[in-house]
Length: 361
Image 1 (cartoon, rainbow, N blue to C red):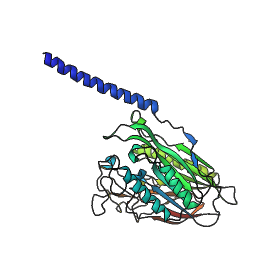
Image 2 (cartoon, rainbow, N blue to C red):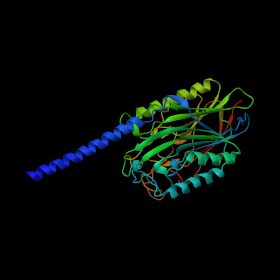
Image 3 (cartoon, rainbow, N blue to C red):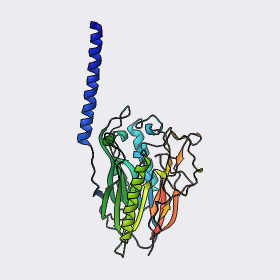
Image 4 (tube, rainbow, N blue to C red):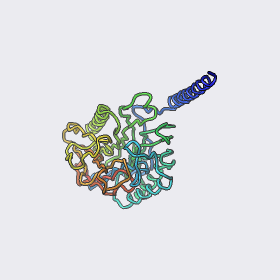
């Protein structure tokens, strides 16, 4: 009987300790939870005052860089892989330098980055905002830019080893002066308590003056929901559409781009078939999403993203591809060309998408 009492006491002590730890964690996450406003100013970078040319071609790029931690040798636990982060800080720097090297080869005027980290355990606390802005500022001979958070948590307590501290978001860098940039909070897909340690996605809306006019080029950087119910994705896309059409009705030129986490309605579903429906399946963007006169712009000849269920292996039939990165443009923007650059997922799980356009007079 004494032995039994000791066992019961030990079990109860362990249970009590676990309860206290969980309660303390919930309190900590509640107190430190990031609670963004519906609309707030984004962080501005640079001081160039160059305006957008009314004539000629404009070149832009959108690239989800996977916080410089999801290159060809990586997998990820939420996609069916095992890793939470790369094996070392050196790996992150190798991927980041590879991303910079690619940017050096391209003629761009505007770049949208998604999943860009700073002060985050999963990317070994590298400040990718500073490094990539400095790179583009040098290439442009003076750049304007903006940054806004999509994810900020003092301690993400899952899986094991834990993700830990995360600060991550969107950055837009432009050859043109960014006069104003605003973050719009998208509908939050998750309820308490999951919400406390999850993403709270927003739209980064930046604007630059167009030469010789009273109009602006409004460019919207976005990374929409991936692991969320369909109704949450619909709510986010509807908010995006409302913001875009409102800016166009003001007389501005409007372009949005980034990682939709949805594929486009005019892409042949057999082009990149679903290998295993137990993993992430990219839903199709509603065919009625695009307002009259607007265009969805993408290139399906090369996949824009891969599943991170394993390191990249183009010979493996379990390698899953997607086309989920692209643009939407207002009727007063003239598309010239769009190309997904086949980087073989060397430095990110996404390929960059390069788009050339002009402004309609």
